[in-house]
Image 1 (cartoon, rainbow, N blue to C red):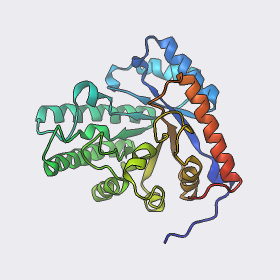
Image 2 (image 1 turned 30 degrees about the vertical axis):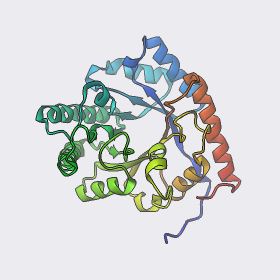
Image 3 (image 1 turned 90 degrees about the horizontal axis):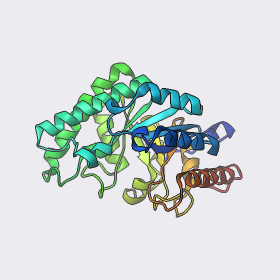
Length: 288
């Protein structure tokens, strides 16, 4: 059993981010700026964006918006074009694979320019895109290997996300993705975890953390119902305590995707839940 190290105040310096749609998803730029300001005012340290294609963005405007908000970009999600365009890597359709690979390279270049983490997972595709499990996995791993090699010179970290079996067809658990990351062995290819998917797929929610500390590059934090953090049963304090004990130093991005509340209210309530969790840890009330 891995020995637990003593935790001190330095371990508690998490960098919290909030996930927002990309600027092109808003009715106008003012609404996007309002949300950036709200993220900052709620106390978050950074923002993570969901973007369909970076080539469609006005990067200069985005940089200006982030600077005005005083909010750095920490990561970008890549999966939006699966639902919109059917992009995926598992399919036998070579044109779709080539289109998806080209898109992911544009994402790598975008991430390099912004010096951020690139989140990858949903663009693997579903079993409906490729019923042959082995063939689909072979194509996915080959494409990820090539993408990791492409990302190596820029220093971009590709954060490979284990996604639950209802949303993708392959690599659902932390162990499955960790195996791919270690087998490929590219320094640009890392692992990330998402608490929503963990709650569905993992039998032991925290036991694997010490084993992935060297490859963990990013974290998504959502409650088990994907509503406001703290509204359901995810053990946030215990989870953050586990991250602190392995010395995780990346961003923790809060995602709320299933709610009746306004985005601003979700930001504030989720931050309250984070503060409450940190308070419990400092008082010794959270144990993994």
